[in-house]
Image 1: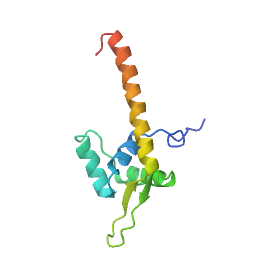
Image 2: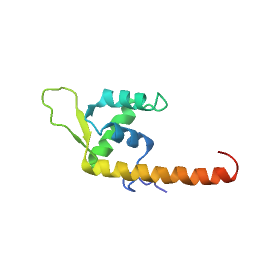
Image 3: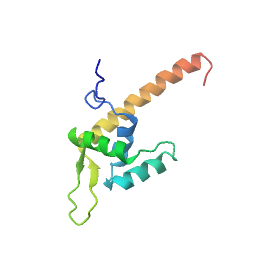
Image 4: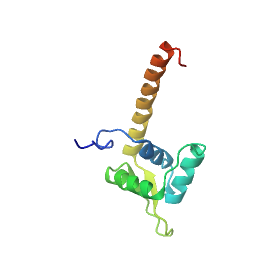
Length: 111
C-alpha cells in the first residue's frame, strides 16, 4: 500500500516543519541547516540531501518560494503566506497531540 505524502494530507513531517519554521525569514540552504541546529540545541539536524529533497516538495506545494536576489549566488528561500498558515495549523495539531499524550500518561502516573 503506497504511503500518503504528508504535505498532500496537510501535515508536516519533522523535517518539513523545521525547514518551514526556519524560513519565516529568508535564508539559503546552509543557513537553514544551521538555524535548525541552533533552534533545537543540536537535537535535530538535517543533511543536505534530505533538506533539498524537502525544499523541492515545499516549493512544489507553494509553501515556500525562491527569493529574487540576483546579486547572491546562493538560492534563498522564504515561506509563503500559504506556508505560514500551514505552519500555524501544524503547531495547533502538535499541541493537541501533546495534550492527548499528557492526559494518557498522567492517568498512568507517567508525567
